[in-house]
Length: 438
Image 1: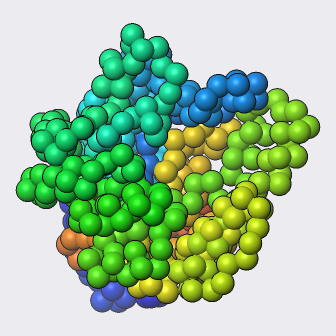
Image 2: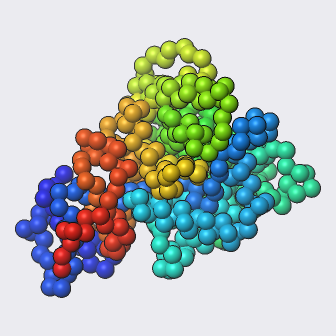
Image 3: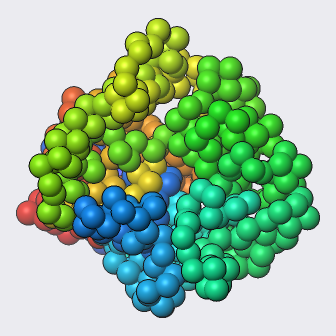
């Protein structure tokens, strides 16, 4: 903590940080005075989906169709062209940046190379958006098992090939990694379900590491998490059912747990309220599930702290489980970061505002405010392998900065009210302009 502070940026990198009296302002430099604001490193969303935009469907559609809530987003390959999805992703990317997310890791559901194309356009200066680590196609053993069903059999394969690389052997797993490498991805995303074989997983991780690519593994259940750990992945995404022993293994191997508290609290209830007409039955059901979701998350934290779990109804266990997960993670010493897992349309919010709203809920689940901030700055940067580029306000790193009016340690919801954003020394947003001078 440093107050007051000055940061000197030359070109796109931080050159000097310190007390204002010790940081010399070069002749002709532009001075941005943020007054009493709190300056932070640019925020990092380590798990997002920029090229999907699901809108919660009508109640009857959700209840009568398998996986009805997700079909609008996951089947965009049918109703939207790849070019249109990239343009949609460009809007989401800009909204993320304007809300303070200067770096994001996009983990799937982007068409064949949509996130790669978006990344390249931003890097070339053609579009405004965050730094993107792109994963291309998600690798899975059987997409119809974990994601989609009831597709027209005559069209299913062509549809799935636009979103997934399906494998059925170690050799096919290696080839899937090479295919994504051909498209120029930054990270490999693999969805681990029980139908994967250990040999298949090991081959995927080995081939990715040969190409100097990290592997992010979607794994929720204990057996899937164990398979990912044994294969040596770099991060476990979600990991809701992780055990204490698995956390110890992850700690010893340096594997990150990427927490994704997307559904914690009343997030989906508020989406339902803003997008669909609900029956009284559904409204009561949503209200009842919110507290149960909170309790599941808290349970997850308690497990991390080795506290005894109470026995509740299934819906109640979800929120308690997540709270327990957070506490167990903190106690275990495992490395952790946080991602929004955002892809939902939230009425009244931009994509960036919806994404950033997911991080303060970790504090509600029992995480200290400073640990929340670390989870989306320094910790996330290390998990991405970009600790030499982003995540801290230090000499040599990119000039990615955000500022809020208050103290986010005292009130973590300040992260939802970012008023200043800079990426690579370029001011993207500044609501403190009255203090600006030359």
